[in-house]
Every structure is written in structure tokens, then in C-alpha cells.
Image 1 (spheres, rainbow, N blue to C red):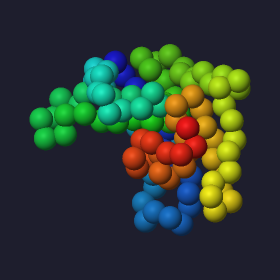
Image 2 (cartoon, rainbow, N blue to C red):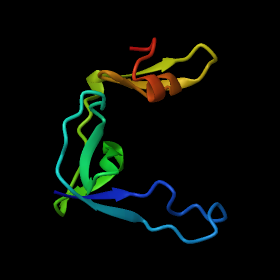
Image 3 (spheres, rainbow, N blue to C red):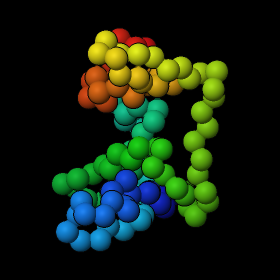
Length: 109
């Protein structure tokens, strides 16, 4: 499978000493890993030292040259306030808070 991923560092003038590409193109097979979240795609790399690449699904632009859009149900999404006043989005069993980003669990779920 070929996956085109939007570069989140693209179009940030003054941050990088060199120009960043708009997209990255990766090729491999999807790998099922028990520790990835539903918002991530694990792709084999063919490199034994770095066998799997984890890609955030919200950065995927196309798979096998077919446009990719992630379906998110508004009924399954809610906005919550953190203990320090920050606002986070909870969708299904994922959250945008730093705790969920690092531990894959948080008190907002």
C-alpha cells in the first residue's frame, strides 16, 4: 500500500533552515499492533532496524492514490475541559489531551 502523508511542518517559514516538503510518501503493508490507537496506522518499512512506521490517520491525504478522509461522527465527539482550563476533544475512545497522547489513557474518557 502507498500512503501519502501531509507534513505538519510544511509552510512554517522561519522555523526550519531548509524547505520542508508538503507531503511524505511511504510504502509498505498495514501491520496490526495491539498498542496503536484507532487514530493511527502502523505501516511496515522493510527495514529490520526500524520495522514499523506509525502514522497519525488525520495526516493521511491518500492511500494508493485514492483520497482519504477520516470519518468522525459528531454524535461520538464531545469537547471537555481539563483540570487547568484547557479544552480537549474526546472522540470515541481517544482524547487530544497530553495524557492520552503519551499514556493512551486519560480521565476524560
